[in-house]
Each structure stands twice: as C-alpha cells, then as structure tokens.
Length: 342
Image 1 (cartoon, one colour):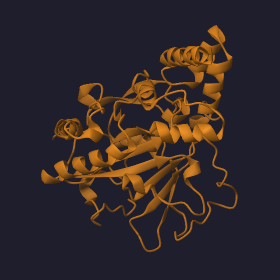
Image 2 (cartoon, rainbow, N blue to C red; image 1 turned 90 degrees about the horizontal axis):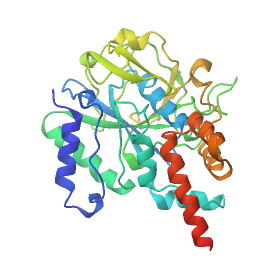
Image 3 (tube, rainbow, N blue to C red; image 1 turned 45 degrees about the horizontal axis):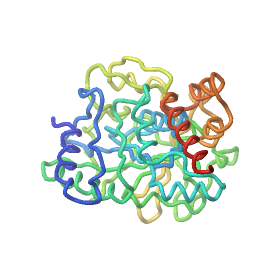
Image 4 (cartoon, rainbow, N blue to C red; image 1 turned 60 degrees about the horizontal axis):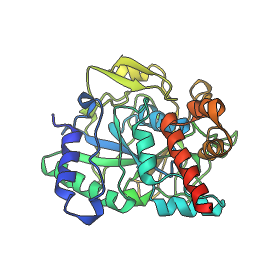
C-alpha cells in the first residue's frame, strides 16, 4: 500500500514552481514508518485542524488527540494536519485585544513540530491558508488518479457550534468534529445540545453502527473498509500514540479492541437537505480533560510577558508546546520590542 507521505511529497515536488507554495516546506511524518497507508476499499479521511495557535498549548494537542482517537468512529481517519492561520488574520485578532503579534506562522508551526509529544500520525502545514486549498486539490487529484479516495474532516472546539454555525467551507469538508476536552461547552447542559439552523436533531452514534458518511461525490465507503465498531488506525502492528492530554506516549497494538476499550459518547446532527453536511460532538470525560481545562494561549502569552526564570519555566512546562523553544522565541520578541521603543 502506498503511503500518504509519498503523495504529499509528490504534490510539493510538482508545486515548487508555483509562487503560492514556494515558501512551504514538505511535511514529514516521524518516525517514517508511521506514515499512514492509503487503501482503495475505503475513503481515506484526513482530520484538518485550523486555528491561530498563538501559541499552541497542551489544550490544542489534547483537542487534536481526542478528535482523532475518539471522534472518528466510522470515518476511517488515517492522519491529521494542523493548519496555523495566516499572520494577518492572527494580527487582526490580536489588535481587537490591543496585543501585538508575538509569534509568526513559522514560529507557531515550529512550536507544534518540535514538541516531544507531537503524534506520529499528524503533520503541520506551514504554508498560507490559500496555498492549502491548492495543496488539498492536488493531493485529492493525484490519489484519485491511482484509484484512492482522500477527503478532509474539520476539527474544532465548542466555539465551532452556535445556532447559526456552518461547517468550515474554506477546507471543503462536509464533516466537522467538535471536542470539548480543552474547553467546557457552554451549550451542553441539562436541556441537551442546541438545535442548529437548518439541521436535524442531535442523535447518539451507536457503537455498532457507522454514521452514513458520504464523500464529495455522494458515495459511501464500503462496510468492509474497517471494523464497524472501531476507530481507524494509520498502520497495523505496533505503533506509538499520544494520550488525550499529550503528557505521555504508550506502545500499543493498533487493533480495533485497543481503541474501543473506553468508547466515547458521540452525537451527530445532519443538515436537513444537504445530508452530506454533518456536525459530530465528542464529549470528554473528567479523567481526560482534568489536566488541560483552563489552559489558553492568552494565559501562555501573559506568562511570557510577566514571569521570569524558574517561575516562567514551570508555567510553560505545564501549559505550552515546546516550552524551551517558546521561551527563546518570547525572549527574542521582548528584546526586539524594547529595542524598537528606544
């Protein structure tokens, strides 16, 4: 079976002549043997996780792991891609709070990639938002030419859901996974999940059934693509995975039994007339979210501005991704700002 890595490499090799992708480095799965394998008997889905990540922290990593490992039942997820937003978009967000842009997209991508807990089934796309559209189309075209189907599924936090919510169209996905592991969902209470405009009611996804997930062509993957009550894993055999909160790695066998021992409650709702458009909400348990609730990029930035020495190190080690690198980047930013003020 061909690896996803080989097709990603082909896309970048063919795109180097295009200005929109000149500055984009080829992504890599590490270790190399962890690169997900494509199969022709299923729709190979990739989880796309867009965000500011200014800077990325343990909560972001927990959302990524929770969405991939527990939210993809029946979706045949094989990999995940992190998409740091463009600098101008993050800068505008900072301006609304009277804050400067502290970390460029290149910085934010590096902080993800250099973290020791970064999962081997994921990669970071460090090109622009616009260039990702080109990359996505080329990847789907190359794989389709060889008889493989590749689609994307979006991932987000509870703020993705509102009465007027719509799936992330910029990534051409029909399915959005919502995880509450890093932030409490204020809409999830005793009255149940809110009714969304033009969507049906929320329905529990049974463990022994697949949600009727269609790709862009409207077709549904064959039932034999994966065990019905399993989460899909990138490769057979033994494989290192990250736990939900990103604090530890464990060596497990990638069989359906390993991933279904503690099934997660999933509810989904489907658009009333665009039946391919679906939200699925994945609840976390207290055991899963207790170490990451309350962590935010705002708190991390505040710590880099107000703390020093061992106190800063302790806070960054607890909350941030690549804490030593983040401390270096933050120090350089502070020194530059002080120089400009003089």
